[in-house]
Image (cartoon, rainbow, N blue to C red):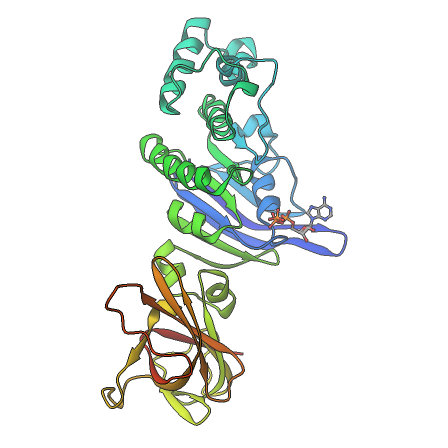
Amino acid sequence: MNLAIQGISKRYADVAALDAVDLDIASGELVALLGPSGSGKTTLLRVVAGLLHPDSGRLLFGDTDATRLSLRERNVGFVFQHYALFKHMTVAENIAFGLRSRPRARRPDKATIARRVEELLGLIQLPELGGRYPEQLSGGQKQRVALARALAIDPSVLLLDEPFGALDAKVRVELRRWLRQLHEQTGQTTVFVTHDQEEALELADRVVVLKDGRIEQVGTPHEIYRAPASAYVFDFIGRANALDGHIDGDRFVLDGHRLPVAATHGDAVATGPARLFVRPHDLALVADGSANDSDACLPAWVVAIHRRADRITLDLQVHEQARMLELDLIAAPDAHVPALGAAVTVQLLRYRVYPD
Ligand SMILES: Nc1ncnc2c1ncn2[C@@H]1O[C@H](COP(=O)(O)OP(=O)(O)OP(=O)(O)O)[C@@H](O)[C@H]1O
């Protein structure tokens, strides 16, 4: 089912947890709400669920105005970070719960419920575990069961609030890949809350970046990563280097070096203070004299070398800038790694400039 969130606001005393949020979610889409702690992700999810009422705005589920409907009337599926399985019920009973507790007129018969439970146990790849109790499951298995329980009622939308947040890093990565596959199979409209940008970028069809109760950017993972709409999004998504300078027409000026700027991002200005952002893997070392005039190059010194299994990261100091640039080299046996203290020329292959 498609969802329309229209001008939703919610205040707590002097905090605007949500400030006039507009968002359309298409049927079958998996959307991630991403932002730091306190940005409003959970509040937005709870408003969609019907667990919280907004101060203003409207919520449409398909063509139905759902703003005043209760949680049950909205027929949403919800999974929280902390396993909320019923301890005294088996896995199968947990999954059947939503269907069994429906009013008699809408309750499927026992055989239909049993079939649906079998089907869901297959879908979550735990076909043998229907008779177990929650305490006999691993953390990852419990969250799969929680997901099956949420899916059992054929929800209009599936709402997931950091569902893998309490699991260790490896299980978390496995489960998010599994969830993506499951989504391909079910095509269930899903809203997923996370503060982990890697999780959002890997899992979602579209990512919504929130800041202080407002939407900072909505886009595909590729758009968010490659074309961040603001300095805030650039900095929040992935590793980023920032250099302070100013804009002068179509140049970014830094310690007397003039780097070409195709377009500034944010409010277009012809002049004024600005910040340039570049990712560590969008920097390259170039041999002296080999750069063209049109290339964006800066002289720098190597001040630290960090060797990891898969990459070597150089900390470079650029002229007078107190800030360092991190540059990634692939850790191949034949990689040319300059010496500590060496003067190098670094080329900025891809970068963005945002006025302050
Ligand atoms: N019940 C409440 N009473 C008062 N303020 C609240 C309440 N719930 C949330 N807030 C405030 O609203 C803002 C948004 O909170 P919300 O929980 O939606 O953020 P979040 O992005 O989900 O954060 P986290 O990742 O830490 O869960 C925060 O400033 C928070 O302190």
